[in-house]
Length: 151
Image (cartoon, rainbow, N blue to C red):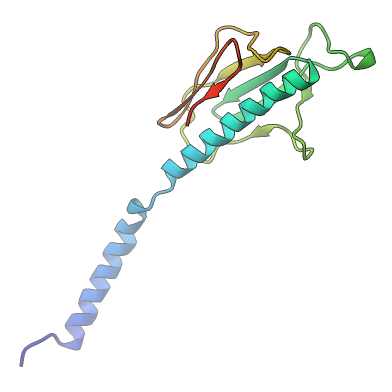
């Protein structure tokens, strides 16, 4: 008789299942997707911070670290005018009322950080202008227009 016995077939299936369980996750890792998603989120947040600076006429300080990003403004004074100097203490909020801040996924490698201050005219009023790296993706901001380029 030719063919395989039932025990041989079950042994082969068990070996294939063990190999698939060990090697499978390496083929479907999520790190590239997480890094791209965070780079897109960061680019959208930078654009929003620039828009808030233009809309309110007040500078917006946008800080990126390995732990995440946040945007703040100087507190408004009498008559809804911006403070001319002082620390950026007022949290910038999105249209839905949530803070303009976020944290990267655990497997996203945020290599470069820094602080950008967007001015009321839409450009950057701080120097030097850092670029932000998330894994293989790099975000840059044009100093004169505040235009964000990246993934």
